[in-house]
Structure formats: structure tokens, C-alpha cells
Length: 149
Image (cartoon, rainbow, N blue to C red; front, side, top):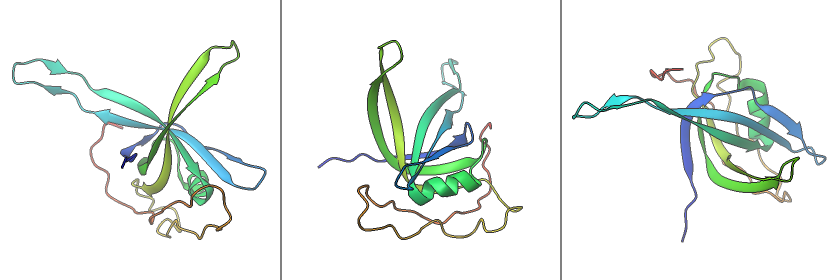
């Protein structure tokens, strides 16, 4: 048995880029920053703040929701799987990319000025689709915690 599951709470680094495949399926990509706070050890050693950047990929109606409602700076909860791939760049150098394929997303930034932000994000998926249907939960407004963003 194996498990590939990621849970992230972070801030969106750029507005999602959304493209539509020939079949009409939406794919959204954006970055998400997670930050470990700085702290001091008991011996006085200071450990600096550390930010990790994650490449997020959303499919189908999650991608469409991200296109409409997710913006740079927003706080999100993303749940999904780690996927890695490689490609050759323009100069023939092999590059490696690690991505989080999200199958659940919750918006944590309050959207009191937007209408419809409380509507659920789930929609039925066609059974003939080659990609597994995504699990989704409702968009929720929650109070912001004190992350440094």
C-alpha cells in the first residue's frame, strides 16, 4: 500500500493561468507559497523564516472556479497529490518539475464583497472522462490567521 497526499495552506503567488484543452477541459496553474516562521532555539540560535513555493495544477471545474475567484495574495487550502515530470528545455537541458495536482480546494480569504462565494464548488463529472473525477468541497469564508502575507 502507498499514499501520496499533500495538504497545503498558503498564499497564491500569481493569478491562475487557465487554458482549455481541445476537449473543453480547463486546466489552471499557479504558485502557492507556504512559510515556516522564524524562531529561536533554547541555545539562542535563530532559525530564519523559510518560504517554499509549490506549483499547483487544478483540472475541470476546480480550474474554472480558480479562474473566476482565485487571485494573487489569496489564502487557499489545497489538498492533492505530488507529481513530478521532466522535460528538455530550449537548450536541450533536462529540467525537472514537481507539481501538486489539487483535488480539493477551499478559499480561506474572506470574500464578503463577492456574491456567490458561498456556493459549493462541486459539479458532476462525466463518467467517460479519462482523468479521475475530482473531490471537491464548498468554498468557505474563514477568518485570516496571522501569516506574514
